[in-house]
Image (cartoon, helix red, strand yellow):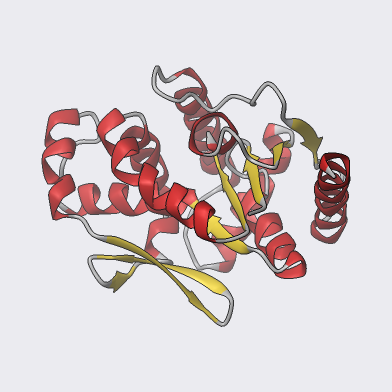
Length: 224
């Protein structure tokens, strides 16, 4: 199986680009961040503090997660409910970051993610795909962009969805999450030693997709 790992900070365009690459290459797209966001949403709905690790761990047995595909687009189901849109709300971002720092949560999701990679050619994006989830991935890419560039993209995305926020709030939340993700003790969001770096600050979506496909094709060709 061909397994492509794309890691990087929030707002780097990982999901948008990975989806487009998957469609062109005929791979299954797996948005791992959606899984953590779904657990974060469940915790948020229960009114549990994102700092209360014991309470978060205690509700994991209540959670059932499934990935589905509607017209080629991934949907995520939390206890049979499609929460694909709700998990993108700004307040869920920090909950996702908090729950992803808990080992029991990571263990809870690990086999679900690896099982998909065993059965399909996949392109998977997240924070620690190349370092933890798929350490033997065929290709590993670490995608990034400037803070301002990433915040502009996320702000535009949220505005298009009708979310009331400001660019300054988005930038501040993004910087806070970057710090939380990269400094956590468990599976910090850092590049794999053998990852190919790709800064797409000056690239549009189509250009980025083309560049990632080149990286993938070159890596596969070298493997023979």
